[in-house]
Length: 401
Image 1 (cartoon, rainbow, N blue to C red):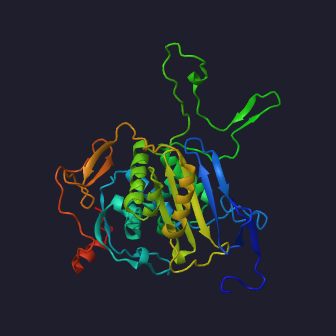
Image 2: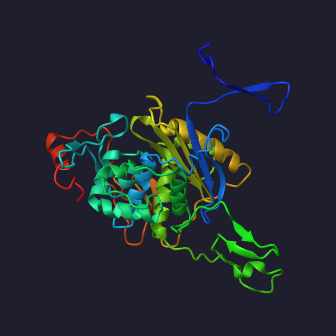
Image 3: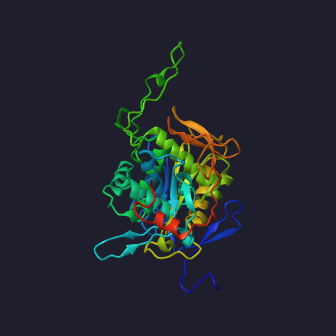
């Protein structure tokens, strides 16, 4: 048989519906992890650290340090949105060369699939289509120290090295940390700390520790006596402007609707997320979320080796997220993402980023950052660029003017 070799261990399980039938299981060579988290409290609702705890007690959700690849990109773009950029800011999607110094030569990042440049693209398109050229240019413009500061705020890294390859997810982290970072985007930019312990009570039932720092003084009322509706008070520290957090959520919704994560659409609920694939397809990721649940998925060999030429986060990790969310959200209404006060939703042309009354998409803007009134002709992905154009885009400050 092409499926089995001498010495393979095969598991046989009773069928879930018919005990007379059995299922065969084989210990896989590839492993992985998944974390499901409540965005507003950090409660870990589900966690899988590998195929079998009996086979390996190593928890790949919390202990495995792996390159996150493109799932880190949203935090580069969030730093930019928090510092003067808008979702429709144009960034050149053109090759870029980075002199590394110290005899290390020139680093030339590539787009996925070795795709060439497509000319100026909106910041939204940079995330939705996972453009490496744009991300490196953006990180170079705002500075890696700022990117590192936002990575620290979101808990992705404690001390990120200031190298441009880090903007593409070259610095290792864990599934737990990445999932918590996405959860902080969903909750409006409030700091959370993942926990497996909700509270601790003494033998008399008194709570001596409670992880959730939110309070609700009016929630204990037993009857209504004309009082105002009770509200949760969140005392958590803020890591990012809530308007910026929503802009990123909106962009990551677009990744599901029209980007690299379209396979997730079949869940049929409002979802956002980002795919990730590292060099050589050694690590495959998908981190995604609904308004009330953040889920991180990772796949890879314990000893990092390529998973194959056809291995992409969108092909293998995203479907796992899709299946998990289909079960987790089954029977629940599709709740839209919460739009914070101050956000202006304006219809724009997805190519030029300018206002349009003909089709387009609804884009989220902060007060005073809306685009001009009229749209220019839409940029074409096949628009040719002359040698002088390409030279201007790949010289000096990288064309980020």
